[in-house]
Image 1 (cartoon, rainbow, N blue to C red):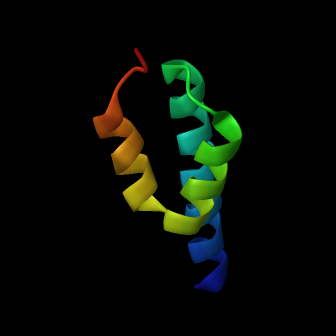
Image 2: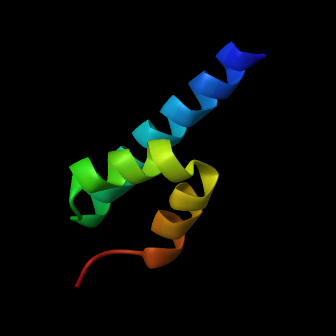
Length: 52
């Protein structure tokens, strides 16, 4: 069960990285936030949209 949890957190970090890359945001901060905050960070980057 712990392995699944770790994989989900890593996937969230990668998802935030890819969203930030597409939106023109800082990818390092996005990846760290994705790992630390998980699904909440992914939702935040989905809601934020493109950087103007």
